[in-house]
View 1 (cartoon, rainbow, N blue to C red):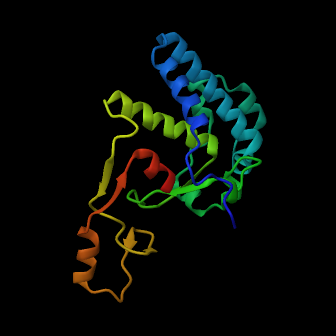
View 2 (view 1 turned 60 degrees about the vertical axis):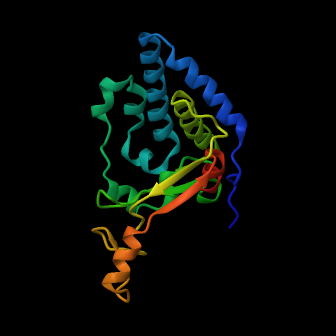
Length: 195
């Protein structure tokens, strides 16, 4: 199945979100509060209307009456097991499928790994946030960087309590796999498009 998410980073969504982020960073606190409130209300109403699992959990009246952070107590709290056990189609909004979103799975360090799916629009926002932080730290988009991961995934199976190395491996092999650093050299745009 071919993914509808571009393997190469699209610049227009990134630049649009970069400009928006820059404007909001310099906004007055009351404008930021109004923007956060507006986005939160929109998110809750969208989830109730368009995401099958949230449509089951959030009553239409609750979504319609939702006004901001003070109403968060009216919403159900989901745990990681809920996201881990559900089919992607139950957690994706109308119009999105596993084929037209990009999946990213957490490491499971809290006990249960979950898979988060992002649309091309979401990826534009995330990449713009990363770029903005990078520029604020004095880096440039063309600076070469290397990312090191000292403790890569320790195995290939999920056991419910964390990673487990297949039983055919020796203790020495397990130690070697855990302690071998891995890296991803190159400019951030190259790394982001390969993730």
